[in-house]
Amino acid sequence: MWASLKILRSAILGGFWFMPALIGIVSVLFAHFMVALDTWFDWRGPLSAIGIEPMAKSAAQNLLTTIAGAMVSVATMVFSLTFVGLTLVSQQLGPRLVTMVMHDRITQSTMGVFLGVFLYAVQVLIAFPADDSVAAPMLATLMAGPMTVIAFFVVIYFVHHMAQSIQADVVVARSGKRFIAAIADIEVLSPEDRHAAKPIAKGARVPVNATKSGYVQIIDYDALIEAARTESMTLELKVRPGEHVLEGFPVLFASKQPEDPDSLCDTMQLGTRMSPLQEASYEARALVEIALRALSPGVRDPNTAVIALNFLATGLCDLARRGTVPDILNDEDGTPRLSRPSLCLDYYLEIVMIPLLPAAEGDPQVTDRLIRLLTALGEATAHKPHLAAIDGWLAALLKNIEALPDRNAMKSGFAGRIEEARTALARTG
Image (cartoon, rainbow, N blue to C red):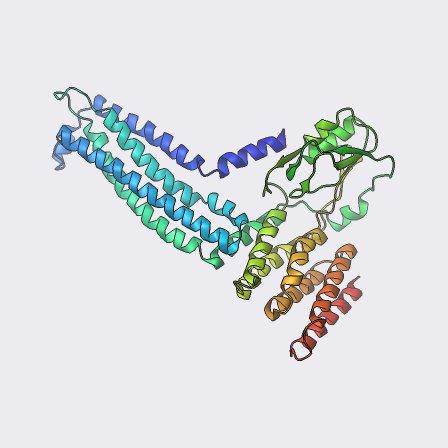
Protein backbone atom coordinates (compact mmCIF):
# COMPACT_ATOMS: atom_id res chain seq x y z
CA MET A 1 0.00 0.00 0.00
CA TRP A 2 2.79 2.42 0.97
CA ALA A 3 4.70 1.65 -2.23
CA SER A 4 1.60 2.19 -4.39
CA LEU A 5 0.86 5.53 -2.72
CA LYS A 6 4.45 6.68 -3.22
CA ILE A 7 4.31 5.82 -6.92
CA LEU A 8 0.94 7.59 -7.27
CA ARG A 9 2.27 10.68 -5.49
CA SER A 10 5.33 10.74 -7.75
CA ALA A 11 3.16 10.36 -10.86
CA ILE A 12 0.90 13.24 -9.80
CA LEU A 13 3.46 15.72 -8.48
CA GLY A 14 6.10 14.82 -11.05
CA GLY A 15 3.78 14.76 -14.05
CA PHE A 16 3.98 17.60 -16.55
CA TRP A 17 0.24 18.14 -16.35
CA PHE A 18 -0.24 18.66 -12.59
CA MET A 19 1.04 22.22 -12.15
CA PRO A 20 -0.68 23.60 -15.30
CA ALA A 21 -3.93 21.92 -14.28
CA LEU A 22 -3.70 23.35 -10.76
CA ILE A 23 -3.00 26.89 -12.01
CA GLY A 24 -5.78 26.55 -14.59
CA ILE A 25 -8.35 25.58 -11.94
CA VAL A 26 -7.28 28.48 -9.71
CA SER A 27 -7.57 30.89 -12.67
CA VAL A 28 -11.12 29.74 -13.46
CA LEU A 29 -12.13 30.21 -9.83
CA PHE A 30 -10.45 33.63 -9.78
CA ALA A 31 -12.37 34.64 -12.92
CA HIS A 32 -15.69 33.71 -11.29
CA PHE A 33 -14.67 35.68 -8.19
CA MET A 34 -13.81 38.81 -10.19
CA VAL A 35 -17.07 38.61 -12.15
CA ALA A 36 -18.96 38.26 -8.85
CA LEU A 37 -17.22 41.40 -7.54
CA ASP A 38 -18.49 43.29 -10.57
CA THR A 39 -22.05 42.25 -9.78
CA TRP A 40 -21.76 43.05 -6.07
CA PHE A 41 -20.31 46.54 -6.44
CA ASP A 42 -20.47 49.38 -8.93
CA TRP A 43 -16.81 50.08 -9.75
CA ARG A 44 -17.41 52.71 -12.43
CA GLY A 45 -17.26 55.62 -10.01
CA PRO A 46 -14.02 54.63 -8.22
CA LEU A 47 -12.37 53.70 -11.53
CA SER A 48 -13.36 57.01 -13.11
CA ALA A 49 -11.88 58.82 -10.13
CA ILE A 50 -8.44 57.41 -10.94
CA GLY A 51 -8.75 58.11 -14.67
CA ILE A 52 -10.03 54.75 -15.93
CA GLU A 53 -13.16 55.26 -17.97
CA PRO A 54 -15.64 52.44 -18.56
CA MET A 55 -14.84 50.35 -21.64
CA ALA A 56 -17.35 49.68 -24.36
CA LYS A 57 -18.70 46.15 -24.31
CA SER A 58 -17.40 45.37 -27.82
CA ALA A 59 -13.95 46.76 -26.96
CA ALA A 60 -13.81 44.63 -23.80
CA GLN A 61 -14.76 41.54 -25.77
CA ASN A 62 -12.12 42.28 -28.41
CA LEU A 63 -9.48 42.78 -25.71
CA LEU A 64 -10.24 39.48 -24.00
CA THR A 65 -10.38 37.66 -27.35
CA THR A 66 -6.97 39.06 -28.30
CA ILE A 67 -5.47 38.05 -24.95
CA ALA A 68 -6.85 34.53 -25.22
CA GLY A 69 -5.44 34.14 -28.75
CA ALA A 70 -2.05 35.50 -27.69
CA MET A 71 -1.87 33.04 -24.81
CA VAL A 72 -2.49 30.13 -27.18
CA SER A 73 0.30 31.33 -29.50
CA VAL A 74 2.81 31.79 -26.68
CA ALA A 75 1.83 28.46 -25.10
CA THR A 76 2.64 26.82 -28.45
CA MET A 77 6.08 28.44 -28.34
CA VAL A 78 6.60 27.19 -24.78
CA PHE A 79 5.73 23.66 -25.89
CA SER A 80 8.16 23.95 -28.80
CA LEU A 81 11.04 25.17 -26.62
CA THR A 82 10.33 22.45 -24.09
CA PHE A 83 10.51 19.70 -26.69
CA VAL A 84 13.68 21.20 -28.17
CA GLY A 85 15.21 21.04 -24.71
CA LEU A 86 14.01 17.47 -24.22
CA THR A 87 15.48 16.42 -27.56
CA LEU A 88 18.87 18.02 -26.91
CA VAL A 89 19.15 16.61 -23.40
CA SER A 90 18.13 13.15 -24.57
CA GLN A 91 20.59 13.08 -27.47
CA GLN A 92 23.58 14.65 -25.75
CA LEU A 93 23.35 13.41 -22.18
CA GLY A 94 20.98 10.44 -22.16
CA PRO A 95 17.22 9.79 -22.14
CA ARG A 96 17.28 9.13 -18.39
CA LEU A 97 17.62 12.90 -17.85
CA VAL A 98 14.35 13.64 -19.66
CA THR A 99 12.63 12.84 -16.36
CA MET A 100 14.49 15.75 -14.76
CA VAL A 101 13.29 18.16 -17.46
CA MET A 102 9.73 16.88 -17.15
CA HIS A 103 9.85 17.49 -13.39
CA ASP A 104 11.16 21.05 -13.83
CA ARG A 105 8.80 23.31 -11.90
CA ILE A 106 9.67 26.41 -13.94
CA THR A 107 8.62 24.74 -17.20
CA GLN A 108 5.45 23.41 -15.60
CA SER A 109 4.62 26.78 -14.00
CA THR A 110 5.21 28.69 -17.26
CA MET A 111 2.79 26.47 -19.11
CA GLY A 112 0.37 26.85 -16.20
CA VAL A 113 0.55 30.66 -16.29
CA PHE A 114 -0.40 30.84 -19.96
CA LEU A 115 -3.10 28.24 -19.57
CA GLY A 116 -4.41 30.17 -16.55
CA VAL A 117 -4.56 33.55 -18.36
CA PHE A 118 -6.25 31.88 -21.35
CA LEU A 119 -8.89 30.23 -19.18
CA TYR A 120 -9.40 33.47 -17.22
CA ALA A 121 -10.07 35.44 -20.42
CA VAL A 122 -12.44 32.76 -21.74
CA GLN A 123 -14.37 32.59 -18.46
CA VAL A 124 -14.81 36.36 -18.33
CA LEU A 125 -15.97 36.36 -21.96
CA ILE A 126 -18.55 33.70 -21.12
CA ALA A 127 -19.79 35.88 -18.26
CA PHE A 128 -20.55 38.82 -20.58
CA PRO A 129 -24.31 39.52 -20.50
CA ALA A 130 -26.23 38.99 -23.74
CA ASP A 131 -28.28 42.14 -23.12
CA ASP A 132 -26.35 45.16 -24.45
CA SER A 133 -28.06 47.38 -21.90
CA VAL A 134 -26.36 45.51 -19.06
CA ALA A 135 -22.82 46.65 -18.22
CA ALA A 136 -19.92 44.31 -18.96
CA PRO A 137 -17.82 43.01 -16.03
CA MET A 138 -15.44 46.00 -16.04
CA LEU A 139 -13.17 45.04 -13.15
CA ALA A 140 -12.76 41.44 -14.35
CA THR A 141 -11.86 42.68 -17.85
CA LEU A 142 -9.28 45.16 -16.57
CA MET A 143 -7.65 42.46 -14.41
CA ALA A 144 -6.76 40.56 -17.59
CA GLY A 145 -4.33 43.37 -18.48
CA PRO A 146 -1.82 42.98 -15.62
CA MET A 147 -2.18 39.19 -15.82
CA THR A 148 -1.06 39.36 -19.47
CA VAL A 149 1.91 41.57 -18.59
CA ILE A 150 2.97 39.11 -15.90
CA ALA A 151 2.63 36.24 -18.37
CA PHE A 152 4.98 37.88 -20.85
CA PHE A 153 7.58 38.54 -18.16
CA VAL A 154 7.27 34.86 -17.28
CA VAL A 155 7.97 33.81 -20.88
CA ILE A 156 11.09 36.00 -20.97
CA TYR A 157 12.36 34.28 -17.85
CA PHE A 158 11.40 30.89 -19.30
CA VAL A 159 13.49 31.48 -22.44
CA HIS A 160 16.44 32.41 -20.20
CA HIS A 161 15.83 29.32 -18.09
CA MET A 162 15.69 26.99 -21.12
CA ALA A 163 18.91 28.48 -22.52
CA GLN A 164 20.60 27.56 -19.25
CA SER A 165 18.89 24.20 -18.82
CA ILE A 166 20.27 22.68 -22.01
CA GLN A 167 23.89 23.48 -21.10
CA ALA A 168 25.81 20.32 -20.25
CA ASP A 169 27.33 21.70 -17.04
CA VAL A 170 23.94 22.78 -15.71
CA VAL A 171 22.28 19.46 -16.54
CA VAL A 172 25.14 17.49 -14.97
CA ALA A 173 25.05 19.69 -11.86
CA ARG A 174 21.30 19.16 -11.38
CA SER A 175 21.63 15.43 -11.87
CA GLY A 176 24.59 15.39 -9.47
CA LYS A 177 22.65 17.26 -6.78
CA ARG A 178 19.82 14.74 -7.10
CA PHE A 179 22.32 11.91 -6.63
CA ILE A 180 23.87 13.53 -3.56
CA ALA A 181 20.42 14.16 -2.07
CA ALA A 182 19.38 10.55 -2.75
CA ILE A 183 22.57 9.27 -1.07
CA ALA A 184 21.88 11.49 1.95
CA ASP A 185 18.42 9.90 2.34
CA ILE A 186 19.83 6.37 2.59
CA GLU A 187 19.67 4.97 6.13
CA VAL A 188 23.00 3.59 7.31
CA LEU A 189 24.28 1.64 10.32
CA SER A 190 26.82 3.10 12.70
CA PRO A 191 29.90 0.91 13.40
CA GLU A 192 28.39 -0.07 16.79
CA ASP A 193 25.08 -1.14 15.23
CA ARG A 194 26.90 -3.01 12.49
CA HIS A 195 28.81 -5.14 14.98
CA ALA A 196 25.60 -5.79 16.95
CA ALA A 197 23.60 -6.92 13.91
CA LYS A 198 22.39 -10.52 14.08
CA PRO A 199 22.67 -12.79 11.02
CA ILE A 200 19.73 -14.80 9.75
CA ALA A 201 20.09 -18.52 10.41
CA LYS A 202 20.42 -20.70 7.32
CA GLY A 203 17.53 -23.06 6.63
CA ALA A 204 15.01 -24.02 3.99
CA ARG A 205 14.76 -21.81 0.92
CA VAL A 206 11.32 -21.79 -0.69
CA PRO A 207 11.36 -19.69 -3.89
CA VAL A 208 8.76 -17.00 -4.44
CA ASN A 209 8.54 -16.22 -8.15
CA ALA A 210 7.69 -12.93 -9.81
CA THR A 211 4.11 -12.74 -11.09
CA LYS A 212 5.13 -10.48 -13.99
CA SER A 213 8.19 -9.03 -15.67
CA GLY A 214 9.40 -5.46 -15.23
CA TYR A 215 11.74 -3.10 -13.44
CA VAL A 216 11.58 -2.98 -9.66
CA GLN A 217 10.52 0.60 -8.95
CA ILE A 218 10.06 0.41 -5.20
CA ILE A 219 10.16 -2.27 -2.50
CA ASP A 220 8.04 -2.01 0.66
CA TYR A 221 10.54 -3.47 3.14
CA ASP A 222 8.24 -2.82 6.11
CA ALA A 223 5.45 -4.88 4.51
CA LEU A 224 7.88 -7.75 3.86
CA ILE A 225 9.11 -7.65 7.47
CA GLU A 226 5.55 -7.61 8.80
CA ALA A 227 4.58 -10.56 6.58
CA ALA A 228 7.61 -12.51 7.78
CA ARG A 229 6.82 -11.73 11.41
CA THR A 230 3.16 -12.71 11.02
CA GLU A 231 4.06 -16.11 9.55
CA SER A 232 7.11 -16.63 11.82
CA MET A 233 9.53 -17.00 8.94
CA THR A 234 12.50 -15.21 7.40
CA LEU A 235 12.84 -13.85 3.87
CA GLU A 236 15.84 -13.53 1.58
CA LEU A 237 15.31 -10.82 -1.03
CA LYS A 238 17.18 -11.32 -4.32
CA VAL A 239 16.49 -8.05 -6.16
CA ARG A 240 17.17 -4.36 -5.66
CA PRO A 241 15.26 -1.25 -6.78
CA GLY A 242 16.09 -0.54 -10.41
CA GLU A 243 16.77 -4.14 -11.39
CA HIS A 244 14.78 -6.06 -14.00
CA VAL A 245 12.94 -9.24 -13.02
CA LEU A 246 11.42 -11.93 -15.21
CA GLU A 247 8.05 -13.54 -14.69
CA GLY A 248 8.37 -16.98 -13.12
CA PHE A 249 11.88 -16.40 -11.75
CA PRO A 250 12.56 -16.09 -7.99
CA VAL A 251 12.57 -12.61 -6.50
CA LEU A 252 12.92 -13.86 -2.91
CA PHE A 253 13.25 -17.02 -0.85
CA ALA A 254 11.26 -17.85 2.29
CA SER A 255 12.29 -20.10 5.15
CA LYS A 256 8.97 -21.95 4.73
CA GLN A 257 6.07 -22.05 2.30
CA PRO A 258 4.23 -18.66 2.53
CA GLU A 259 0.47 -18.67 2.89
CA ASP A 260 0.09 -16.15 0.04
CA PRO A 261 3.20 -15.87 -2.17
CA ASP A 262 1.53 -13.36 -4.49
CA SER A 263 1.05 -10.90 -1.62
CA LEU A 264 4.81 -10.97 -1.05
CA CYS A 265 5.36 -10.13 -4.72
CA ASP A 266 2.85 -7.29 -4.39
CA THR A 267 5.21 -5.52 -1.96
CA MET A 268 7.45 -4.88 -4.99
CA GLN A 269 6.00 -2.44 -7.50
CA LEU A 270 7.12 -3.27 -11.03
CA GLY A 271 7.02 -0.96 -14.04
CA THR A 272 8.16 -0.68 -17.62
CA ARG A 273 11.07 1.62 -16.74
CA MET A 274 13.44 2.42 -13.92
CA SER A 275 12.30 4.90 -11.31
CA PRO A 276 14.10 7.30 -8.93
CA LEU A 277 11.67 6.53 -6.10
CA GLN A 278 14.01 4.50 -3.87
CA GLU A 279 17.75 4.36 -3.16
CA ALA A 280 20.17 6.28 -5.42
CA SER A 281 20.88 3.79 -8.22
CA TYR A 282 18.74 5.67 -10.77
CA GLU A 283 20.64 8.91 -10.19
CA ALA A 284 23.99 7.08 -10.21
CA ARG A 285 23.20 5.44 -13.55
CA ALA A 286 22.14 8.82 -14.97
CA LEU A 287 25.54 10.32 -14.11
CA VAL A 288 27.35 7.25 -15.48
CA GLU A 289 25.34 7.53 -18.69
CA ILE A 290 26.39 11.19 -19.00
CA ALA A 291 30.04 10.18 -18.62
CA LEU A 292 29.71 7.35 -21.16
CA ARG A 293 28.13 9.60 -23.78
CA ALA A 294 30.79 12.24 -23.16
CA LEU A 295 33.48 9.60 -23.78
CA SER A 296 31.84 8.15 -26.90
CA PRO A 297 33.85 8.46 -30.15
CA GLY A 298 31.37 10.92 -31.65
CA VAL A 299 31.59 13.35 -28.72
CA ARG A 300 34.96 12.97 -26.93
CA ASP A 301 34.22 15.46 -24.15
CA PRO A 302 36.25 14.21 -21.17
CA ASN A 303 35.58 17.41 -19.19
CA THR A 304 31.87 16.58 -18.94
CA ALA A 305 32.75 13.02 -17.90
CA VAL A 306 35.05 14.37 -15.19
CA ILE A 307 32.30 16.67 -13.88
CA ALA A 308 29.93 13.70 -13.63
CA LEU A 309 32.62 11.70 -11.79
CA ASN A 310 33.14 14.59 -9.38
CA PHE A 311 29.49 14.44 -8.32
CA LEU A 312 29.66 10.67 -8.06
CA ALA A 313 32.74 11.02 -5.84
CA THR A 314 30.99 13.54 -3.59
CA GLY A 315 27.98 11.29 -3.00
CA LEU A 316 29.95 8.04 -2.63
CA CYS A 317 32.43 9.57 -0.19
CA ASP A 318 29.52 10.79 1.91
CA LEU A 319 28.06 7.27 1.92
CA ALA A 320 31.46 5.76 2.81
CA ARG A 321 31.97 8.14 5.74
CA ARG A 322 28.49 7.67 7.17
CA GLY A 323 28.62 3.87 7.51
CA THR A 324 27.08 0.82 5.88
CA VAL A 325 23.58 0.20 4.62
CA PRO A 326 22.00 -2.68 6.60
CA ASP A 327 21.65 -5.96 4.72
CA ILE A 328 19.64 -7.57 7.57
CA LEU A 329 16.39 -5.88 8.63
CA ASN A 330 14.72 -6.67 11.96
CA ASP A 331 11.11 -6.55 13.05
CA GLU A 332 9.90 -4.35 15.91
CA ASP A 333 10.96 -7.01 18.43
CA GLY A 334 14.54 -7.00 17.14
CA THR A 335 14.27 -10.39 15.44
CA PRO A 336 16.03 -10.61 12.04
CA ARG A 337 13.36 -11.13 9.38
CA LEU A 338 14.66 -9.93 6.01
CA SER A 339 17.99 -10.11 4.23
CA ARG A 340 18.53 -8.15 1.05
CA PRO A 341 21.30 -7.71 -1.53
CA SER A 342 23.99 -5.20 -0.70
CA LEU A 343 23.07 -1.54 -1.13
CA CYS A 344 26.40 -0.38 0.25
CA LEU A 345 29.39 1.27 -1.32
CA ASP A 346 30.44 -1.89 -3.18
CA TYR A 347 27.08 -1.94 -5.03
CA TYR A 348 27.42 1.67 -6.20
CA LEU A 349 31.03 1.03 -7.21
CA GLU A 350 29.78 -1.73 -9.52
CA ILE A 351 27.29 0.69 -11.09
CA VAL A 352 30.08 3.21 -11.70
CA MET A 353 33.11 1.09 -12.54
CA ILE A 354 31.72 -1.73 -14.70
CA PRO A 355 30.67 0.58 -17.58
CA LEU A 356 33.29 3.30 -17.07
CA LEU A 357 36.38 1.12 -16.75
CA PRO A 358 36.52 0.12 -20.44
CA ALA A 359 35.29 3.54 -21.58
CA ALA A 360 38.07 5.32 -19.68
CA GLU A 361 40.83 3.23 -21.27
CA GLY A 362 43.23 5.54 -23.05
CA ASP A 363 41.73 8.75 -21.61
CA PRO A 364 44.18 10.25 -19.09
CA GLN A 365 41.73 12.77 -17.59
CA VAL A 366 39.09 10.19 -16.74
CA THR A 367 41.69 7.64 -15.60
CA ASP A 368 43.16 10.26 -13.26
CA ARG A 369 39.70 11.03 -11.86
CA LEU A 370 38.90 7.36 -11.30
CA ILE A 371 42.16 6.93 -9.37
CA ARG A 372 41.29 9.97 -7.26
CA LEU A 373 37.77 8.61 -6.68
CA LEU A 374 38.95 5.20 -5.49
CA THR A 375 41.75 6.70 -3.37
CA ALA A 376 39.32 9.09 -1.66
CA LEU A 377 36.87 6.28 -0.95
CA GLY A 378 39.67 4.23 0.61
CA GLU A 379 40.44 7.13 2.94
CA ALA A 380 36.76 7.66 3.78
CA THR A 381 35.93 4.13 4.95
CA ALA A 382 37.44 1.55 7.30
CA HIS A 383 34.90 -1.19 6.57
CA LYS A 384 36.83 -4.26 5.36
CA PRO A 385 34.37 -5.41 2.65
CA HIS A 386 34.39 -1.88 1.23
CA LEU A 387 38.19 -1.75 1.31
CA ALA A 388 38.36 -5.10 -0.49
CA ALA A 389 35.98 -3.83 -3.19
CA ILE A 390 38.01 -0.63 -3.66
CA ASP A 391 41.23 -2.64 -3.88
CA GLY A 392 39.69 -4.91 -6.51
CA TRP A 393 38.71 -1.96 -8.69
CA LEU A 394 42.15 -0.40 -8.26
CA ALA A 395 43.67 -3.68 -9.49
CA ALA A 396 41.32 -3.68 -12.50
CA LEU A 397 42.22 -0.07 -13.25
CA LEU A 398 45.90 -0.97 -13.05
CA LYS A 399 45.38 -3.61 -15.77
CA ASN A 400 43.80 -0.92 -17.93
CA ILE A 401 46.85 1.27 -17.45
CA GLU A 402 49.29 -1.55 -18.14
CA ALA A 403 47.60 -2.02 -21.51
CA LEU A 404 48.65 1.50 -22.54
CA PRO A 405 51.60 1.84 -24.96
CA ASP A 406 54.98 2.08 -23.24
CA ARG A 407 55.57 5.44 -24.84
CA ASN A 408 52.72 6.93 -22.80
CA ALA A 409 54.49 9.24 -20.34
CA MET A 410 51.69 9.04 -17.78
CA LYS A 411 51.62 5.27 -17.60
CA SER A 412 54.22 4.90 -14.86
CA GLY A 413 52.78 7.80 -12.88
CA PHE A 414 49.29 6.31 -12.85
CA ALA A 415 50.62 2.87 -11.94
CA GLY A 416 52.65 4.30 -9.07
CA ARG A 417 49.65 6.16 -7.64
CA ILE A 418 47.52 3.01 -7.79
CA GLU A 419 50.19 0.98 -5.99
CA GLU A 420 50.42 3.67 -3.28
CA ALA A 421 46.63 3.63 -2.86
CA ARG A 422 46.57 -0.17 -2.59
CA THR A 423 49.36 -0.08 -0.01
CA ALA A 424 47.39 2.45 2.04
CA LEU A 425 44.30 0.23 1.83
CA ALA A 426 46.29 -2.75 3.08
CA ARG A 427 47.47 -0.77 6.09
CA THR A 428 43.91 0.42 6.85
CA GLY A 429 42.44 -3.08 6.53
